[in-house]
Length: 194
Length: 179
Image 1 (cartoon, chains in turn brown, cyan):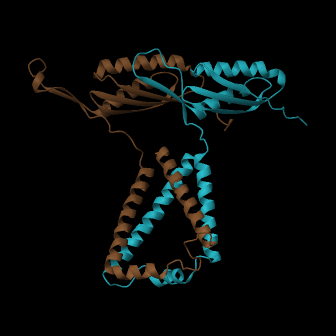
Image 2 (tube, one colour):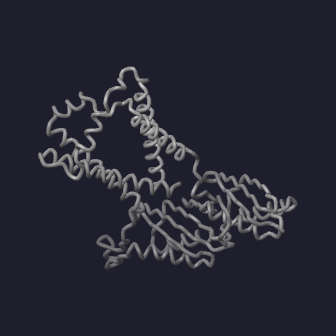
């Protein structure tokens, strides 16, 4: 979202500069083809507007509707966090497997997420964990955010996370195709940073 | 800047939503031959047909729009501090990527330096991209404390699994005089 917002404001900035520069040059009479004595809404535009009649107002209404929908999407994008599609529940057993494993077991995706969260939180230096698992069973992607307490040795923590991931794969059968771990090191606070 | 951008985008969205709904309502009412609502056309239509392009109002507004555009571009195009930076990878063949939040590393370095006797009020600034880190540490302390700062910073970087080649610059600030 941050990249989109930045791009949006860069485009907006360019538009403002172009409009501002054009308006200034026209107002100062520096554009040969435009008479600075012309009004902001010149007669030729007014006449064209009246020629179109009702259709002109319908175009305005349609443009307003499009603008309102785009604005709503922009507001929604700012307010709702954009998360990937959460992985669906895991199903074990089924028609193909009826003879060897009769019955069917469904493991809720929330339970899968909580299992790895709990395992990671068992590390003594991990204060808070948040895990999102997106994608599907063939292509699971994990995004983990760990808040670590002071003086945590990250290299040791990495070993623990790797072991935890092995346990997760063994238990659930999910072998992540991509995993991102974001660490936040909590300090004693009150220090100046820029 | 990211929070400011998000708030500005929210405000822009609200303004555009209000403008779009206004155009929709006014357009439909006018097409149906009803009286204009909520804004009467005459209030904005009249001045637009009378004001010449050469008027000082048009010039002033145009300059204002241009200046606003330049300000927006300057703020958006200058480099932003990264939210997170890459750290050393664990010895694991799986597709695992590791990141650390920039501010949290800055706080760790500042806290560690302030814990060294004779050093205080450490300012830390971490920049870079992915595995390329540039660190500037500015504690308040005497010049002979530089080896201590170097050791402390190296220890923190090792503890947070910073990538191998971190460009570190230590700039000691003069200690405050005690009255």
